[in-house]
Amino acid sequence: MRSLRVLRSTALVTAAPLMLAVAGLLHPRHLTAATAGDWAGLHIALLPVFPLLALGLIVPLWGRPGRDAEGALTVLAWSGCLVYAAYYSGLDAVAGISAGTVVDHGIRGAAGRLFAVGGDLGRTGVYALAVACLATCAVLWRRHGARVLPGSVVLLAACWFFVDSHIFWPRGVFTMLGFAVAFTLLTVTTYRPAKDTARTETPANR
Image 1 (cartoon, rainbow, N blue to C red):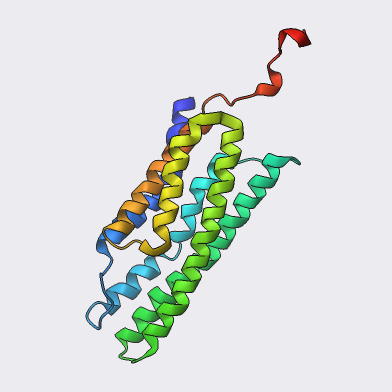
Image 2 (cartoon, rainbow, N blue to C red):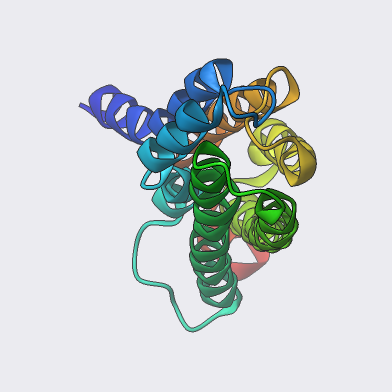
């Protein structure tokens, strides 16, 4: 029964990064009049997918946060996920859908400005995601100890590359695969018995 829950949760948290990795293989390398339609269309399809990347941080922390350090870190992680979802969707809408549309309709001079604005939105979103990742790793470290280290290292590395890789091949695709691997490792860790030193009795306390 536990293995089934692990599989369901793993499928939930890896669906978005795997879809984004596949989309990265299809993403045009450059925005031109010939690729503008595909550029805009792909970003329209991805508009609901980018925010779902945050599920990899929300699912391992699922539950009502307490009034303690873990609870504060959990709220910080959720807040970072919310900011990421809002601002990275802005990148998708501005530098993806809008830029592709104006180029497709032959409007000159607008795409560069849209890319600049979209880049600022995207970086803000990724920085917020990085804060959420750090907070999530801190909570899971407190609960599970060093077992979260492999997933945490892969997760933070993926965040680092996500700042300027988007989903473009090859770095962006491997970045999304890195998120999928990290989310899998962290999710599996949460289904193992948590470290609970508060219940450990020493001979002096008996």
